[in-house]
Length: 231
Image 1: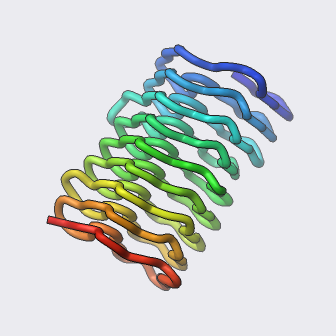
Image 2 (image 1 turned 60 degrees about the vertical axis):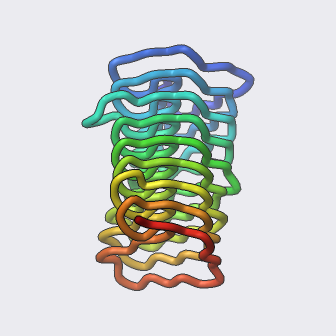
């Protein structure tokens, strides 16, 4: 638990914590945070079972985050990483995490978030965004989003109430188990650019690869759509 000007966490293993709050492995409200530690097998009732970042100006997560579980169905967002109100860059792998709410791997809220050259794989959410849930402005999601599952909307990525963002990289083999947008689900926003390859995703209802609803100024450019399926 860090609340200071700068927090740098490296060369550390954060594991096997279980708390009735935020940030099972790491919680920080520092102005600047850099985390390259190994963070795994933590549980929290609320957001960020692996890592919770709040109230700072910017943060960097470059270490692996895996096998974490945010278990509250009303507030347990971001099984791996939860960032709210602090511009966060995630470059490390995020995999095998679970959220009982939104963002099985990663949940991002607020402006200026970046997911860069990261692998986001085999995460699970029970609501929106099996791999990544994004709610904010001026964001860039550039990752390989692979084999994630959402019970409801956006098996790979879900963007809600977001403006001025881009989705690049690859969105492959993700699933929306009961609703829409197996690969990507975007709703209620504006100015969204999609150049990602969207391949072999599945949705139980509609939009195996991509669903866009109530989003103005959507551009899909140089993207491949192959072997996506909906029932």
